[in-house]
Length: 285
Image 1: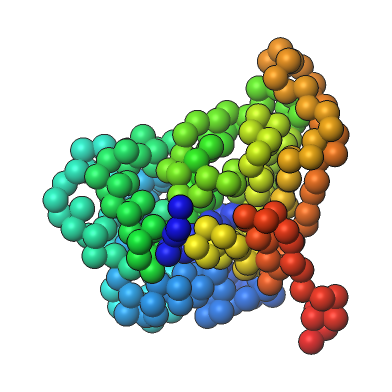
Image 2: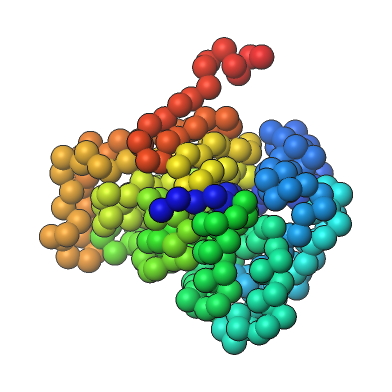
């Protein structure tokens, strides 16, 4: 399937210009992840729609994004507060999404997004615009995790590498070749992503650190943006994978799980499964 649009999944806790100590981020908000969102959407006059459906405090989260995009000079940002599935069929909400240059999903619970928006008219419009237009879909934390076809719904970091530690469901299907996890380093989610790719060994697992994202162009390649790292699990050449035969609660074993650690500026070809990293000397320029 040919795709014209851009996806920007973010690992959570992206810089919104409220950090008191700027040295904690690689890039300030004027050059950070939300800057990339605005740039890809068409600039400060782009029509950006923020969807805080995943959040338990949607009004507060929506206002945070209005403030953050406002600091970047954006003049046309709207919050689409979908609280129930019926809201995804309201004519005024459908019109808002049809006219958008970018839709950004907040963090929270990714299952709320699929439950209230998945398979609705708004979801179908998002898929159509992403496929056929220069349209941006961004999302942080839950908003990033819901982008994949096979979506992680939860899982215990304390039971890493135990079968059943990860919950899976159907996501929004914007990118079918990846399984995306967020807050990956801080919350120690290596085990649940490893189990996820053991369940789906043709897919690449993507673990996004906080304030770190991907710029996915045309569903073919991505570039790492932000201040942290991205962990990739490529299971295609697993030599041992006992996920299918184990009982739930049993420790798992995987061998030959190919792993990449990527940082800002590094690239990955989704179709060819090839990594292109910045040369070492680029760090000192």
